[in-house]
Image (cartoon, rainbow, N blue to C red):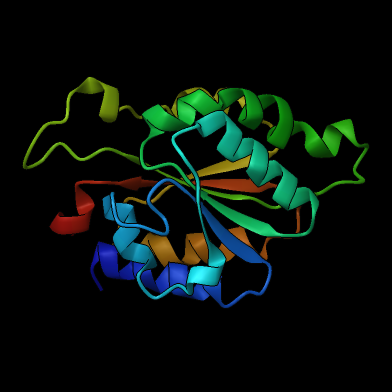
Length: 178
């Protein structure tokens, strides 16, 4: 299957779980290429958030503390940077700060922005995977380089029982190239 088709398949799979909820910019309404991967998801599972990335991840953390499995969508790494406080100081540390009483499970989708056919400039194409791997201790980051990697990675993120959250890094250019 193609890259985009595998993402649709993975999102459909996640949506089958009664605890999942999808939130972010352009989840309920079209606006990014990631929006196209949610086309089969019931509107009741979609929560549109304004452009307020730190607030979005704060809401994500609150949902996770209330036994939801949030799928929090940040269309670019560059946007996820704006939620670094919530990611590093809160989500990643919840289990440690609560002496293991809270073992939340969050799935974060982000991407390395596409550069083809039109280069959107450097504020949209960042890849901060390695930098965040150095500061996160309870969150796994997985790059989705090949279509065959996508479904197993999302399945792992949903089914994991180790108290970790997962950031899945997509490649914007691959939606049309692979």
